[in-house]
Each structure stands twice: as structure tokens, then as C-alpha cells.
Amino acid sequence: MMLKKTLLGLSLLLPALLVQAHEYTAGELHIEHPWSREMPAVAPTAAAYFVVHNKGAEADRLLSASTPVAGKAELHEHIHADGLMKMQQVQNVAIPAGGEVKFEPMGYHVMLFNLKQQAKDGERFPLTLTFEKAGTVEVEIAVHKDAPEGSAHGEGQHQH
Image (cartoon, rainbow, N blue to C red; front, side, top):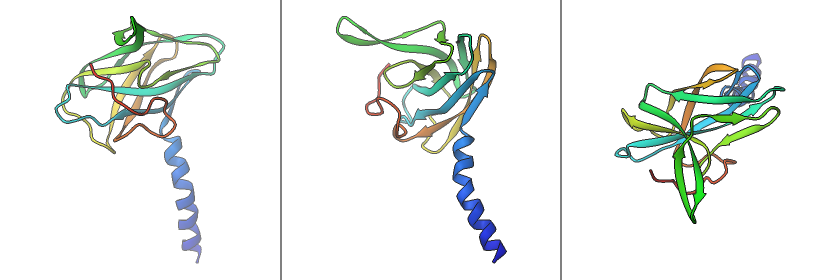
């Protein structure tokens, strides 16, 4: 009977632990649910998304990203120009004090080039984010077939 209660307790606790395990902290920054969409095996690129919350009194900046699964990682944003959506590289992304920045489809994102192979749904890969003040933090990117529930602009995939 005691074993059943212990197993029931663990089964109720485990989902909460798994949710918590996919959030990261670097100094005053809190990085929430890093993810990427599963891409076709022949696609030459992929993108990584997440939300950075700055709980501090000073702004910070995301300076760069890197991962062993890609030859190169760049910070990018989508902009509206002349009635078209265009993607362009940015040198850094300001994270305002007491605010947040969403890295999401059709907004800021980390573009991954020269992939060794495309990750599949359910897999994870490491991504190192380097901030001006908070330093570096390694996160695990969870790969999903579709955008996770609650992520803005989950439908559609941008082309590069």
C-alpha cells in the first residue's frame, strides 16, 4: 500500500518537475521553454525560439548564440519592409529591465545554419546563449513537430 502511494505521489510530481526542467536562469534573466520546429531532413536551416524575462533593474543584451549541431548560429528578426516580410541578422537583442523579449516565429529568433542533421520531434539539442551582463547559459532546445501551445504565430514556417 505504501509503495502505491509513493508511486502515485511521484507520478503526480513528475510532470511538474519536467516543466520546471525546461526553464533556465542566468543572473536576473529567466529563459522559458526553448524550442524548435521539426524541419524536413533536407532543409539546410532551422530556427530556435524562447522567451527571455529580465527580472532585474538593469537592461541586458543577448550578444550571440552557438550550438554544436550547426556550423553557425545568428540572431535574426523579421521586419515589414515595402509590404513584405523580410528576415535580417541583428548584432544583439536588448532585454529591457523588468521586461521580456519573445523569440518566436515571425519575430526575433536564432537562425541555425549548416546543420549536421535535422533534429526530429521529441529530440533535444544544446544551445549556448551569451548575454552582456548575465554571461553564458546553456539551454536545451526541445524539438516539436508543431509550435508548442501558447507560442505566438505557431502556424506556418518562414523560409530563408
